[in-house]
Image 1 (cartoon, rainbow, N blue to C red):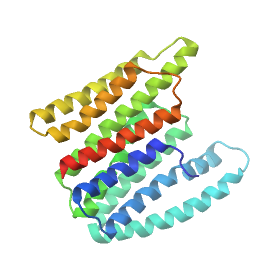
Image 2: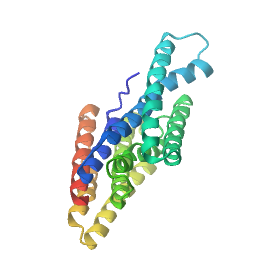
Image 3: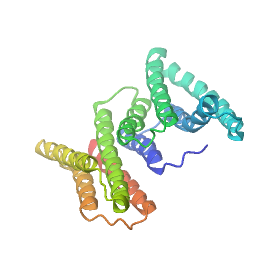
Length: 259
């Protein structure tokens, strides 16, 4: 039941930590906000198991009982943490943010139930939901929605989406080595994302935000270099660790620039 997607963990936790770095402080509400985000994130696999048990599997699977226990524990934690956030932020705001997060989680489960979890565009869209923890952390630390939180979210989302496209382009190239058919549209989309990163960097530099421009510049250069000199024999674990390292460095630079 424990998610194995290292990239998803990085997309969830790195923006949260970066936002606290920008804010320069944290609070008990930050712990509650992180706990709520983690509870929803950890619910995805148990929900998927229970959905498959209800709609797909004919026989009772042993992991269904484990999934129910996970859901009971995570659901209880989410109710308690959600109540704490509602008490501090107001019921309406907590309900709106919670409803959006729950809808995104259920949407991801529904796509996985229909075997679409590997959709590149779904993952790029889900990246926006995971990196929204930057805004959540900013609210928990500052008590409001500062402008820098939205900048941090957008920049982390852009880098994360570009990284997802780059990884899928590599996977497609590995597959094409066997089938001789490559998805050129995917490669073009990846280069478009790299171009967008470079364009954002240029716009920020033109405004005088040189340190903030350094993050998308670094990401664009790293992705472009990776695609241009792609070694298909490199182990995917190594590729994943490189991507995670880039995301962390990118978030730290962005956070330092926004302080």
